Length: 279
Image (tube, rainbow, N blue to C red; front, side):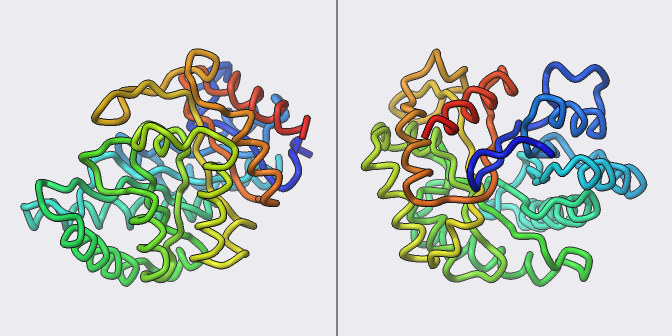
């Protein structure tokens, strides 16, 4: 059995760096060897997994008891001025869900949109309408897949905490991907036990207590400026108070997946898991 920390499984955004062969099956096996419990399939530069390969990934994940999620391509903007780009964005989400489901992934993470100088209220409605259409385009094979718009780290990008939570209340099969590093970079605060707890309580209050029983969380070190996120960095090089974040996750009885996006991947994923065990 892969090691678990309470109700949370910890893992990496993509294949661990120490994996001997660059394949998702090998990545799943390496996650198991490391004692971690989950892996996010990175479709960020395109969905480059075919249906046959997806089946082998699912088999490996089931065999090693590793939970999977997927991250859709970066090239998504549901608020684009170009209707063709909006259609293509929806198609990328659908394709990620279809292939992700064949791999055994239960969540598909994506960056929803940019404001494009539009009022936030208008962008919210546009994103919502397009997400409703996207959910309608999902096939029977994706019934268990949850679409997870990610909390954005950049001020120019749609995806504040309130926007992501509100979307999740209004669109079926949508739930948040809570990226705490992005939350910290976007707001410049949200870096204390009380603030982390406040985020989780808001999610629970708006989406119901069960939402904390199946959270999808991203954590990494983060460099940021006035406009928000600059880049991901390793935890020990950043000011993210990951110890208090983990403490908040424990105290709010969270279960689900924690995906580490630090550049050193499994090193910080293991650090998070080991720190979590102390609580």
